[in-house]
Length: 596
Image (cartoon, rainbow, N blue to C red; front, side):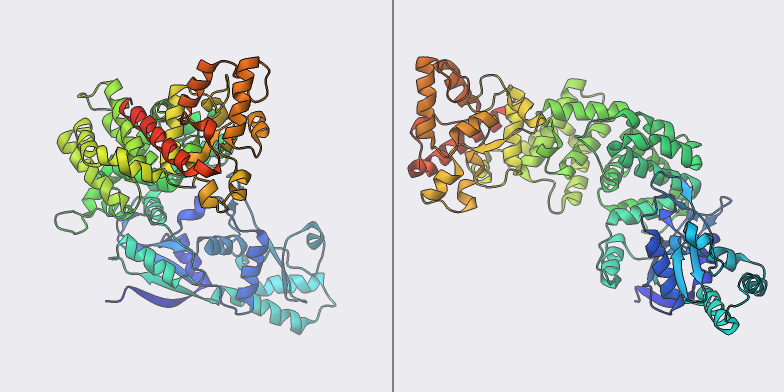
């Protein structure tokens, strides 16, 4: 069975299909990212008969057209949005959405004497040789009258040369563009695979892009839901753009959605800044208990899970559920409460969270449990925090995590979140994990290792101080992007038989340390610099850090999971030191997790 068909379509027909809504362009309400020079080059390529790449469309069932009617066979443009938007701007004279969400024209000029295209500039505007705006030429009632006006302005121009050039310019509307139409019964994953294989640039298109495209076909409501996702993600990073969105996107400003995200204009927390892929995943889990993008598209298409047939009567309810999930997701109260939970678990900076997917599922679970009267607020918080950390510890959000998510939600519905979490802990976090697997996870040179980040979170919750610091704690260092230094200095190890990064950059050899302490340590092994600490405790004369009490030193070493034989450590017993420290770090992580 053919998965797609290829046909050649005139530029004028493509633009007509877009105007009539036969082809939907999801990107029209997003900022136009092409430079004006790229628009110029596209028009020049069409003028000279050069290929401009294929447009790729995918059929959408149940799309809403202008006036509210439903189209059974609307095509979603999934590749070529920028090219079609450029054509609409240059040929049809329609404005594009700028970076500030304002509408602005892109005016392309043409010189029929030199057959040159250019972005309109003041100098070109003052020149009679140029057709200042080709869209005016294409929209004129009579191109012959347009040509006559040009000769009146340029009486000495070579008429034959100009007429030939203008005829070729008019031919742009009839230039052929390749359109690849994907079959309507293909699933999202197949569409994504075909897209990558067809696209000459090999540009990946995520499954979430297809969901976004699908959402945008549902009339005004769908366009505004898509904008809600886009704007929510954008304002999470750049709250100052709110006024631009409000002032320049009147359609969205007139909808009830703008007020839902107005709070983001003053939001400065950077812990959780979801992209639209994350938002779609979370909304799919909350609204449909589905983790895969393809399943979300199926829901929005009205696919009956029993008959496996499209039932258009299911579509409005599906969009209502999805919209309700988005409302929960973008809520100031919900998001701030969730972020507070994650921070209370010690994850106070986004750099500590290597898995956005773990955060996504935890937030979806939080939203689903909000209405659960069987759990108190404290029990819900405990479940969310432990689930998040458990996910990081076990790698539950890697691989085919979407299927795992859907299974987890079914089991949570059957057993309850607290009981199902206990089942997972018994099966995956037993003695073998804490005594063997976790130790192996700590054999790593990556400071992004989940195990190491959880160790840091454990340190934050305990209020622990930096290595050899008297008063500066780990939380202050992380928030201030403090320094991570080698306990056994790198150069000492390189000079003494450990030249590889894998050896000297082991995470068990790292500690958050104040810069002055690290400078004092320099390339000296612990055997030497710990002797200096012992000396300053005896004399009170500071040489490294500010600790002058033996009990305080022992407490500091325990806080940092440092073995008590640190004062004897050199390159000679480095491996013994690493092994001992990993055991102490693992014990600290276990105590932290069980105390959540």
